[in-house]
Image (cartoon, rainbow, N blue to C red; front, side, top):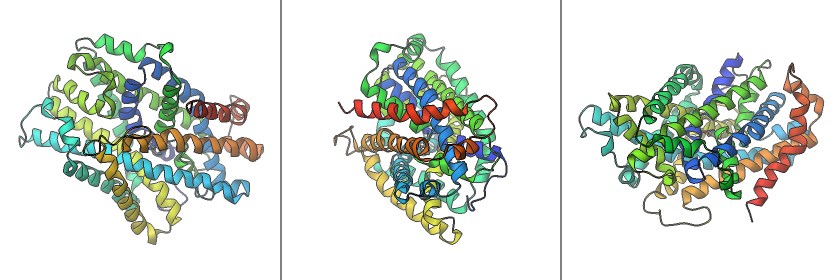
Length: 442
Ligand code: PHE
């Protein structure tokens, strides 16, 4: 994204923000979080939080971007006249930087898996998706560093050249294809032995299993999957044409996200019994289970390779938004600095991604706070920095900003949604976020 005036049509804006939102959050993180925190109980909280908190917050971030139209490290000052509020923008920058650090570990796994499956296809490695041994691969620092390097490198090159637009066009094909693939995998998973138990685990809302901790993680998952609280969505909206449709764009993104999350869950949970896995597998869940489902299909190796490429694409459109946020804030879109800044940030990300990666290898025993180094990076971003960023923005929007400006940003209001939304943002959401946040401390 090389200049401030960006997409000429709303479509470009929707594609980019959907690209940022839909990624590892829905497909990789949702199933493993649901597995750890109670299946149906988690899904229920995730749905409630995503619809009642995530959607209005997404509308809020789009509105702020639309009325502010500048870099997120100065947008709060521009809107309120208070310089210190720019700290919210910087909170976002730090959040996406750390997020990219651990995101790239998983991105790297996808790259390694693509390499392995391609080598199986051309018979360099022995056939059989079940021969891929997850633990051996991810605990090998040489493979994993290489995977991360390629993932971060691809992101960096795209951001450096400012060619995201090409990717947005491609996502018109890739995202629907990903949907279709997920549907096919779900279809296959549902035919496996013991599938019903898995479906039940994911869909049955066992309210008694809801805990304070799982609530916080479900809230964090909603923020993570919708890219909220990092100012990433504010940035994209600040680039969008004036006539962009905030509410329908936000709704589209939320609905897509929910669908992909549930499909990813339905692709994995029904298969657990058949392959002897528990829902509590953790971050490796998708990588362990899906190859086994594909192996049961005709031309499974080939289709798995295609799926992995689509998955990588979805992860890249998100990682691009992670890097772009810092690059645009630090270069102020001065193109002469773009190459250097993109490269420097990418190198820094690669460096912080190493300890995250070692959490699955030589540092796996090093546990504190939320768990391994990887878990702590994720916890810091998803459960602290993102909710804090969103909370602060609700306070600015609800308590400081002028209602008429907001109303203008909100746009045409056929269904009279402005006031319900405004009341939610001003009086309800700050307290809810704060409550979940504070309660989990005890
Ligand atoms: N929402 C993205 C995903 O689910 C991750 C992300 C978070 C991207 C914050 C940008 C900003 O993969």
